Image (cartoon, rainbow, N blue to C red; front, side):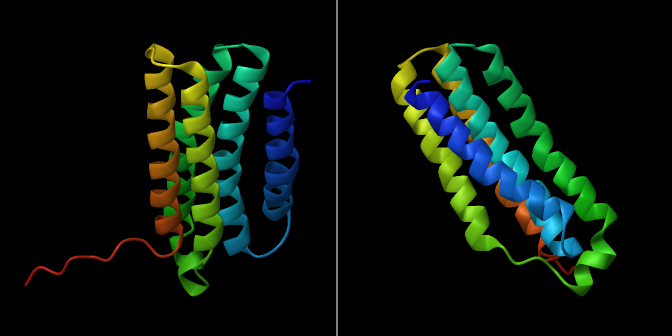
Length: 150
């Protein structure tokens, strides 16, 4: 076990384990937030495993997860809009913490990878991961303010 796999184990055991518990128990608002955070935590874990095991295919899995995870959350936000409007989730501190973790992991891996095509892919994954997580969290907490046309 090297440092990369140890960090991935910590992310998977601590973060994803807690979010799986959150999805399995509790009120709807906690389940929706936990589902969003689980995909945002699994992606950095896959990136760390990719570096630890020297498997570039794991980066492709992380790219797919960074793209489809927030889309799944947006689907849930749309389908559960009425129920979530009654008791909207408020987990901005967790959202920013997970987005920060994703950013740190991507930046560290970019430094380890060096300037290459792989670094560009990591930066795209980081942008999708952070942007998608923030947009999906905003949608869960009640959506964006609607413009009124007079």
